[in-house]
Every structure is written in structure tokens, then in C-alpha cells.
Amino acid sequence: MTDELILVVEDESEIAQILEHSLAKAGFEVEVEARGDRALDRIRRRPPSLVLLDLLLPGLDGLELTRILKRDERTANVPILMLTGKSEEGDRIAGLELGADDYLAKPFSPRELVLRVRAILRRLRSSRSVDSTYEAGDLRLDVPGHRLLVAEQEVSLTATEFRLMKVLLGRRGQVQTRARLLSDVWGYAEDVDSRTVDTHIRRLRRKLGGEAERIQTVVGVGYLLRA
Ligand code: CA
Image (cartoon, rainbow, N blue to C red; front, side, top):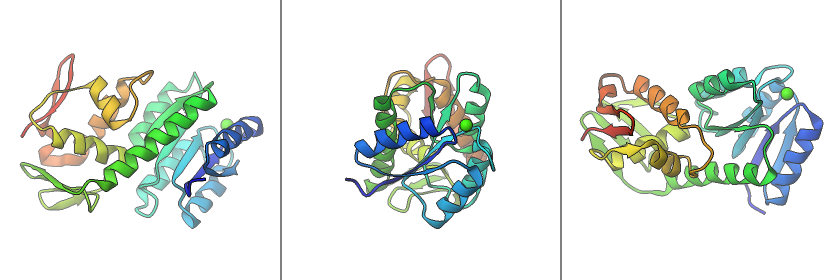
């Protein structure tokens, strides 16, 4: 058993059972909630290690729930893995823009689910465990403090944005391909849309204010953070 709690928010009971069973078998503590509004209460009462979030839910839909969680500093760092249907590409992008860490398209295999969950948790742990500070221009990433300062002002980042910033700053001046970023920031290399990278870069730039242009697009290749 790990001491990591996964909250499954899914209103289709058959899918919820499969999710619960797969995660429990992998050693996680699992709670299931079918309503979005009740999920919000639970997360506020006891923030889980990760939320597995269906988008179409009674009470409060998944995107709205994501928006509320990411706005509140007590819950902004809880990682969110969205479960999306084939027809929900727009919602998927909207969810990533709002700060969800990743998505898993239905139908998915239990094995893939567990791999994704572990990848997110591993990323989070490693982004918390390295002890150093990275700087470029007016950017300063305080790794142990888990915060980014832009011209001495703290900017709030999601877990994934933090990890992305750490990789870009740690390798400043070197072009990073989308594939490399997917592998190093998201923790796996296959079957992920490279637009996930673009979406997160766009969001990160918006948060960097006057330092936004320090992240350069290298057309057809990837991104570079200027030293
Ligand atoms: Ca649903």
C-alpha cells in the first residue's frame, strides 16, 4: 500500500468500479464520488494526492470543478487527470488551459491508467525533491520552495507548469523538442498529443509577464528558454 489517496470523480458506476478496482490493485487508497459538487467538498476537506476527473458530471461539471480548484491556493496544487470522451477534444484543451495536468481518453486500459497516475505522482515528487534555484533574467525558480518569482513577484504555477519551467530553466539556451519535453515533463513519450506541450507553454508565457518572450518557439522543433 502507498499512502496516496486518489479521488475518482465519475458518475457512471461501471466505469467508476473499474477505476477503483484498478487503482486499488496498484496499491492506492481510492475514494469514489459521483457528483462534482460533492467532490469539491471532499477535496477541500481532505486534499487527495490526485483527482481522476470525468468531465460530464451532475452537480458541477469537470471543467468548472477544475477552475474552482485551480483558483484556490489550498487546492491549486492537487494534480488533475481528466477522463475525456472521443468527442471532447475542445473540453480537453480547455481543461489543460485551466490547469489540469493531463488527460486520458476513453476507452483506456487499466494499465495505461495506472501508468499515467504514477507518472504524474512521480513528476510531482521529483519536482519537490531537487534542491536548487534556477535563474535567467528576471526569472527565479526556487525549487525547494516550489515557487517562481518574476521580477521578485511570486507567480502561481500548477505542478506541471512548475516542472516544465524547471526543465526549460535548467537547460536554458538549449532547444528542447516537444518529444523531449513530453518525456521529461510529462514522464512518458508515447501516445500524447504534442499540443499538450503547446498549451502549457502558452499558459506559462501568460504568467511570465515581461519575461514571456524569454521562452522562444523554435518553429517545427520545440522551445528554448533564453539564458
Ligand atoms: Ca459522466
